[in-house]
Image 1 (cartoon, rainbow, N blue to C red):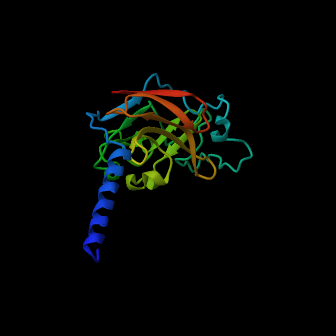
Image 2: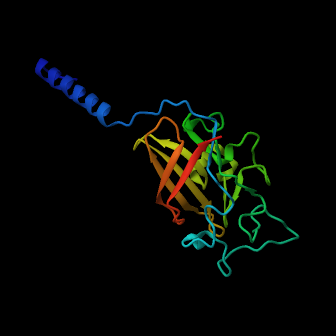
Image 3: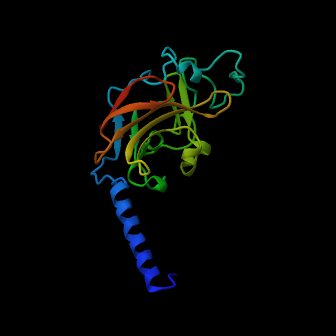
Length: 212
């Protein structure tokens, strides 16, 4: 609390300056309208994470890597498919869905591959995603833990004021998160548009997002 009228004036002036700086430099939240789902234009199974793409071998299953081999007498959801992914997975079609009831932390500007209407835990129910030579699994089948594991998501990054498209894979051996493709789009009231790669093992330069 200010001790003198002079201190009070300085405190008020500092608050005004801070407010002006926030207004000038804080990114504006997109106003929409936004759709309930978006997809990557022209998406096909090996568009992202193809083992034949330079750089993507790091996410492919490998001989002598410590991989657990399928046991036909004891099938597991993580059993490997040699054309990519695991037996529990559904082949992703490049679509992202919004579901603020399952993931309120994301708000209205967050879409994810796991949130297709009707999806849930279990084999081929949507919480396991296959793409390219890779796969991902919703962490502990719990939407609240989404960011603790690998996912494919489309979101507004409030901190830096830009749209981001992130595609991640689950490592076949360690189950760690592997970043496959990460791109951004500056500005705009919805996520539709061209995203430019900034990180990830897949070198594809751009991806385009369209409304469904």
